[in-house]
Length: 241
Image 1 (tube, rainbow, N blue to C red):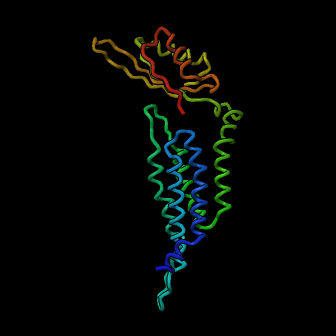
Image 2: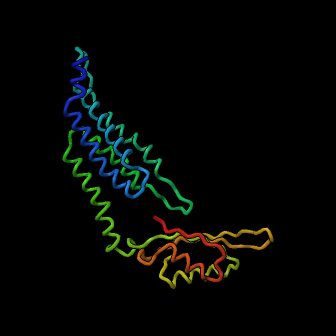
Image 3: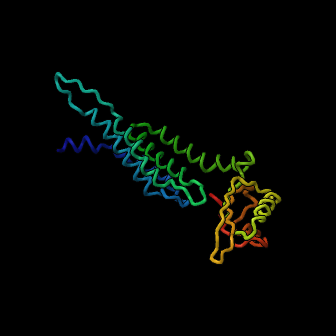
């Protein structure tokens, strides 16, 4: 029993688990600051246990005793490979489709997958590679991507807006499109639905998705401007993340 404990709880194993946990905190803090579903605790748990399973996978092959007359071929990273596919259910849990047809949670899902990758890399002994990967990912997410959104092509520094309007007159649909065009808003999608009210009158529900320069877009200001339009009955507006 003593030898088993010695083999399982070596200093190297503890160091690997510590490095995996420390690196995962960098990703966890980044997500936590942005109020995303995966935070410090989730990232730490994923990376640490992925590291542990990778160590177990490798050590179990190395410690296996050969049996005379029987040849057993085992992949030392087979268990680690299952982590990559198995972690997918966590990633799927943070991806969801909003009412306005936008998809959110993709970056967070990728971060979950990345946390598992950190644990596997450290567990297999690739310390520098794991550290370099974390630095590059954080650089890309926090520095390079925002820089592209500011100085890159026009489409990169625009924001998408979802607007739901209720109009009495069908002719006003053209008026709202003209208003957006005059304010340099590019309409990407329009959906119109007729609603019959209790008094048998017809109301037109218009859902628009349009984009504009992020510097000029503010939810409250945009709401107040559209609210001034005489034909705007009810308004629901959201600047998409």
